[in-house]
Structures are given as structure tokens and as C-alpha cells.
Image (tube, rainbow over all chains, first blue to last red; front, side):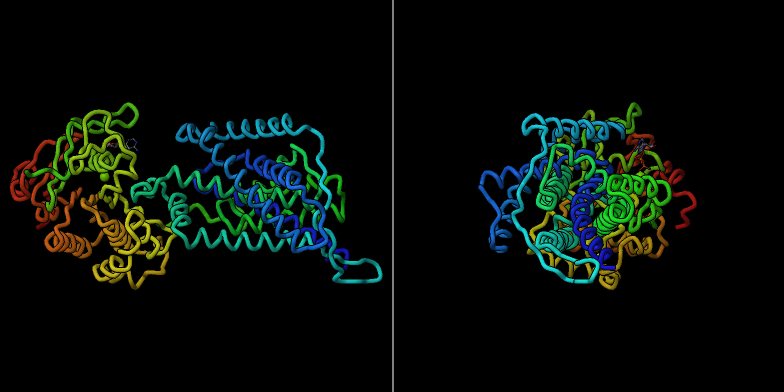
Length: 307
Length: 241
Ligand SMILES: Nc1ncnc2c1ncn2[C@@H]1O[C@H](COP(=O)(O)OP(=O)(O)O)[C@@H](O)[C@H]1O
Ligand SMILES: [Mg+2]
């Protein structure tokens, strides 16, 4: 039982990371109907920017959790800005010129952008795995049985709390601000949004920037949680987050978060009870199963709508 | 000097290779209600969208308040003071009535919003009653009122209305036409109205045009067109007035 609770905690932590990445897939799909396959690599870039920032600032393990958190928020902010610039540039250079062309064109370009980013980071940062020593270590025991001790690390708490705060802020942005309304308007009827004076190009750019910034925070979390990154982490994390978006219902924001949690839990439990070698297989099989049996996802809306 | 608020000159548009509009010339003056009537597929909606820059005029020009607008992006044209309630209403179905009205006012200084909203609710009380309801669940007539209300929230100098009476019960359509007349007389609202419902449109409008297969074939005052034999035969037959 204790073992189970420990896996639950680990799964929720991992799921938070996937959920943050999944938001970017689902938002872009909602607004321009395109799957941005380069999004996982923007997450990877976010992880690298975080690592470089940490190294430049010479941040090392600190005994004070408060100082550690403060420093990490600064790193997160820098990483969000730089990843946001990547997101903006990718949309502007690679996707916008293809808007209105046949459906497959931006998809193929996205795969191209993904390969480019991987190679760019490999060429500039090297192919080897990059380690980082723990910045926030420690934790506490929440359950002590005779067979197994359940521990929560400070890092796990930080990841879940930060994800919760970001999601709350993001939900407010989408549901209550004029920017969020413009985004929902473009998602529901882009031509009409234009006819009301919305600059659709700016709205789409903003969507890419927000998605990239959230992925950058996920990249930082991944770096801190696993302590190692390489130029290839965007591929599997990207596919898992994409699976999360599809599972939650592509286009649905709460769905992306829920899907992220489910995928995180599936991966962790599969590794714990079956095989950690094949944990990726579990997540990828999930993608196939969802696509075949419930393409509309958990919280997706049916295509039929009253008009 | 009297200047046309809207001047369309020689506009031609295409869908792919198919030409939809041929050398369209028309004007709307400040304070007028002008209507364009024509059968289904004549090109009326295409013209509305060409004015707003959604369909591009390949030849010809569109001038608004003395400014050429046919090469401007749509959102900039709208910000000059043109507002369209398009064919099919196109309200945002998954937003509330209130949010739809907020969307109408995106180009307007927020300090006017509360007053404008109160005026819209006074004009269409049903919108106030339904303010928190998802717009996609409104009835057809309510959606039409919302679409017009949303267009009015932009404080337009020129309101474009594409078939506001389509699919509505005659009584609801009459309410909408009465509202337009009232806004025109009390506030000088300038309206360009596209209709298949020719009788009511021509009664309401000071001037009108007839469009056939992408060309303007007739123009004149509302009463001239109402009494024109061609109009009578083609567009008023069986309307039972
Ligand atoms: N999106 C489109 N693509 C291709 N042809 C179109 C499109 N919209 C309208 N048309 C064609 O253009 C012509 C004019 O249509 P429209 O402007 O909608 O007419 P109206 O509003 O007068 O009923 C019609 O022949 C119609 O089939
Ligand atoms: Mg039409």
C-alpha cells in the first residue's frame, strides 16, 4: 500500500510536467488546427536554457529552500522569455507563410523544425548527457510502514505547487481577460474575430509564445527532477504530452492537464509494477488506443454543434 | 462638400477562377439606409466581405471616409468604424451573450463599455435576460439580435447587415427592421443592408441597388425600386404585402 502511495506521488509530479507541455499542443491545435510537432523540442530548449542560466549564475545546492525557490523562479522567468522568443520565431518563419495551404504542409514543416532544433542544440551544446547536481534536495517522510517508507521531496512539492499556480493564472488569462477572449474567439470563428477588429496574426503569435513559455517551465522542472538532460528529451516527452492532449480532448485546456496527470500516472505505475525498461511503450500504446477508440478524448467536445 | 461615406468603384472579386463580382459601383452616404437586393447566389455577401477586406477586390477600389481601404488588413478596416453583422449571424457559440457583446467592443475604449452595454440591453431586453447563457443555445431570433447588438457595440460609422431577417418569424423580422429605422432616425446610424426580403428592405431604405449574377442591374430610391416592374416580378412576387 505504501509503495502504491509513493508511485501516486511520483506520477502526479511527472504528470504535472506533461500537463504543462500538453497545454501548448492543445492551444495551438485549437486556434489553427495544426499539431505543432516541434513543441516537444521547444520544451527541450527550455530545459537547456534553464541549465545554461543556472551554470552562468553559478547556482549550486543551497541549504535554504527559500533561497533555492527564489533563484529558480528567476531561472524560470528567463527560460520562459527565451523559449517564448523561439515559439514566436518558429510560428513567424515556419508556419505563418504556409497558412491557408494544404493541411499537410505545416505538419511536415513542424517535423522539419523539430529536427532542426534537435540538431541545433546537439551542434551547439554537444550530444552528451548534461548532468546537474540537485539544487533543492531533501524532503520528508509522510508515511512509515514496516515494509516501505513514503517520502515527498521538496522538489516534488515545488513542481506540483508551481504547476498549480501556473494553471490557475493561465485559466484566469483564458477565461477572464481580453487576450483570452480574443483567443477563444479565434478558436471558434477566426474570420468573425477579424471582422470585429481582432488582429488574428498577433493572437496566433501570442498563443505560440504562451505555449512555449509553459513548456519552458516544464523543461526546468524536468531538469531539476531528473538531474540530466540531452538534446533528445523533447521527443519522448513531446509524444507523451501530445498523448495527454489527445486523451484530454484536443482543444480542451482542462483536458490537457487531466490528460497529463493520467499519462504521468500510467508511466509511473507501469514502471513500478511491470517494467521500467518499457515504460515509454505504455504511454505510446495509450496514444494508439485513444486515437482508435476515443479520438474525441475525455473532455473534448463532440463535433456536432447547434447553430 | 458632400462626400460619400462608402464608395465602391469597379470592384471585381474571384473565388479561385470563378469571378463573383463584376465592376461593382455603389455608394453609401452618411446617415442613409441603403439596401442591396438580389437572388440567392447573386454576390451580395461577397460584396459585404470585399468591403471588409475578407475577400480581396482584384480590381477596383473601396473608399471609406475618403480613405482607400481595399488593400488594408481586415482588422484595420474595422477599426476605421465599419462593423458587419454577417450572413448566418456567426455569434461565438461557446461564449456567453455578455462575452459576445464584449467581443463587439474590442476596438472601443473600455470607458464606454458600461453605457453601451446598458443601451444594448435597453434595445434588446432579451439579451440582458440571457446575458450569462451560452450564445449557441439561443433561438435564431435571439442570435440575430445578439449579432446586431455585437456589431453596434463597436460604435460603427457604417453598419453592414447581411440578411438579418433570414430564417426569422415575420414578427421578429419586423422588430429588427423597426429597431434599425429607430437607430437611423434618432442617432443617424448609417446602414448598408443586404436582403432577399426585398419588400421590407426597400420600404426601410432611402436608396437601393439590385444585383444579378455579380452585376448591379438597377438602382434608385426605395419607392422607385418597389414600383419597378422588374423588381416586382422578380423579388416581390408572393411576398403578400
Ligand atoms: N467560399 C466560396 N467559394 C467559392 N465560391 C463561393 C464562395 N462563396 C460564395 N461563392 C459563390 O459566389 C457567388 C456569390 O455568392 P454570395 O456572395 O454568397 O451570394 P449571395 O450573398 O448574394 O447569396 C455564388 O455563385 C457562390 O456560389
Ligand atoms: Mg448571402
